[in-house]
Image (tube, rainbow, N blue to C red; front, side):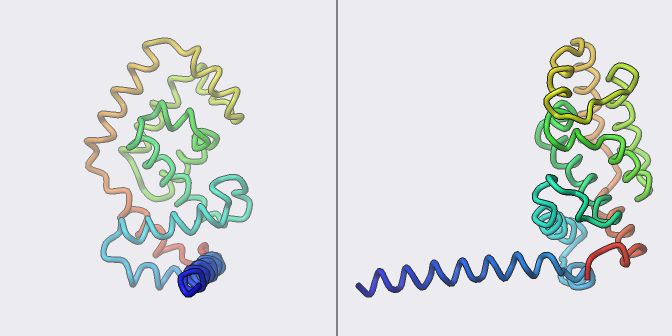
Amino acid sequence: MKTILIISALLLLGTSCEAQKTSLGMNYSIDEILERAVDPEDAIMELDSILNEKCNYGEDISVLTEGEKVVLFIENLEQEVNNGGFDQFFFNSSGNYPHETLKALEQIGSIEIKTLLSKAIAVWPNKNVPKIQMTRRERQLQLSESAQEKWNTLDEEFFHSQEYIPQLLVNYIETHKKQFSK
C-alpha cells in the first residue's frame, strides 16, 4: 500500500510540476533565459522549446509575436536541415514557411544560410513552394533528380557554414526584447 501511495504522490507531483512548467513557459522571461544560458545554443534551445509549446508545435503560430516567429522559423530550419537536409525541411511542417524563414534570416543578419535557403527554394518551379503540406509533399515527389542533387549539395554547404546562427539569434533577441513575452 505504501508503494502505491508513493507512486501516486510522485505521479501527482510530476503532473503538477509539468503543469507549472507549462504555465511558466507561456510567461517566460527572456532576460532570465539569456542570463541563465551557458552559451547562445543553450538560450536558443530553451526558448525554442518554450515557443514550440506556446504555439502547439507550429499548429497556431498566430499566438507568437513577430520576434518569437523569427526564432521559431530559423530553429525549425536548423533542426530539419541538420537532421535530414533541405528535403526534410520542405517535407515537414517547417516547409509551410520557407519565405517567412528567409525573411527571418535576413532580420537576424544571416548571409550564408539565407543564400542557401534561397537556392533551396529556387529548386521549386517558379520558386513556388506550396503552403499546404500534403500538396507540397506530392509536388516534392515529382521534382527531378537534379533537384534532390542540388539540395544534397546545399546540405553540405549548410553543414560547413561558418555562420553561427545561435549567436545571430541572441544578438537579434537582445536588440528586440520587446518582441518577446514577459
